Length: 61
Image (cartoon, rainbow, N blue to C red; front, top):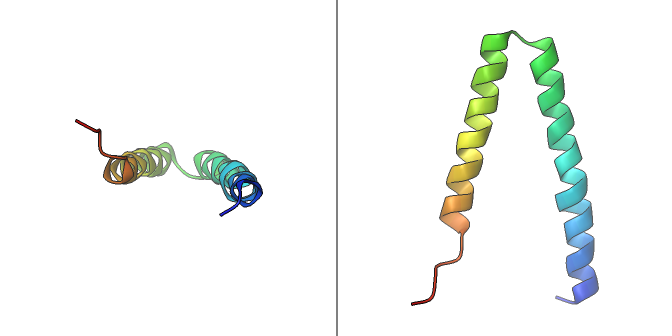
């Protein structure tokens, strides 16, 4: 993969996708009850941390 392709992927999926996720979270937290919003936020954070932990590169010894 060329560096320009990697930059494109970063900006299109990473950066723009972050705005979509943030706006979805904002919408859910304003339109739903505090309990539903809290459950959604907690689940999103836990799942994100589990995925990041599973995909992190192994440390070299």
